[in-house]
Length: 216
Ligand SMILES: C[S@@+](CC[C@H](N)C(=O)[O-])C[C@H]1O[C@@H](n2cnc3c(N)ncnc32)[C@H](O)[C@@H]1O
Image 1 (cartoon, helix red, strand yellow):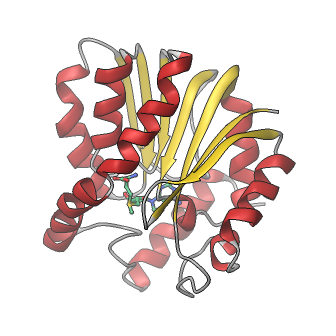
Image 2 (cartoon, protein in one colour):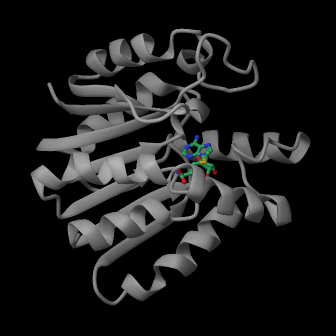
């Protein structure tokens, strides 16, 4: 199995050799436009994530693939977090989120890192972990799910929002479960194998499907 650092290096090399699609690695001017659009298109999913977390009153939160940081900003404000952490491999998204969230640095413990799902560099436990539309890019979902399970507090929630692809997912997406043509069932099976229980699952919009996972 690849270590996180080696895997990140591998992805970085791959990105240099072949330019990755904007959704997977937003960059440059197009990436900025993509980020702006993404915030608007995913607004309903962001609100849904917050609604799932409100009942457990989380104080600590981590996000995998935070993009522009919009979801994390909402979580900090609406849930009154004390600690927020996140990874995203895109330099542009890392800088964008740092800027968006800098005003909270003095108020809460904020820890954003450039990295991906294979490198979750924190000490748990977290009351809440979220990933919105980044799962499709995870190369070894079973390994990452097990790691997330290990970081979650006993009554914590992992909120996973899938980018719904239907029966014909694009061939280039790296996650074998997302490519399978039956992403939802395959993801549920993998989450259960990693020790999660499914507390809720439902379509959020045409392009988003939400799963609320607890510690099995
Ligand atoms: C479609 S965007 C969604 C961003 C954000 N979650 C949102 O909904 O606004 C996908 C994000 O996942 C990030 N990403 C790509 N591969 C990833 C990986 N292996 N682990 C974590 N994040 C990844 C990208 O850099 C990008 O910011």
